[in-house]
Length: 145
Ligand SMILES: [Zn+2]
Image (tube, rainbow, N blue to C red; front, side):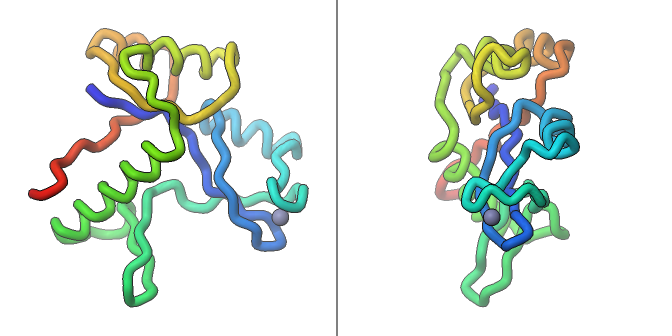
C-alpha cells in the first residue's frame, strides 16, 4: 500500500504571500498557529491563514477545480489525481518501505516534520493508526486509462 504522510498546508499571510509548509499533524499546526509561531516564510508576518488542502488544478479557462468540489468527471478526476501525485512526489521524500518508521519519527518529533511517501503493509498501517499518526493513501492510477 503506498501512502503519504502529509500535513502539507498551503498558507497565506495577511499580505497575500502564498507558501507551502509541512506539519507533523493538523493538531500541531493549530497549536503552533494559536501560539503565534507560524509566520510567513516570505515576510515574517504572523497572521497566517490556511488555504484548502485538497489538490487543485488550474484550468485553461482560469477556474480552479478541486477534488473537494463536487463530482468532477472521470477525465477531470484523473487529471486532479495526477497533479496531486506530481505535487507529492516532487515535494516529499520517498522513503520506500521505511514509511511507517519515518512517519512515526515525524509524529513523535524525533525528526523534523517533512513530507514523506512510501510503502507500508496492512499491519504497519494499523500500527500507525493506533499511534495517531496522520497519513493518507497516495492515489495510484495508470497514466493512460
Ligand atoms: Zn508574507
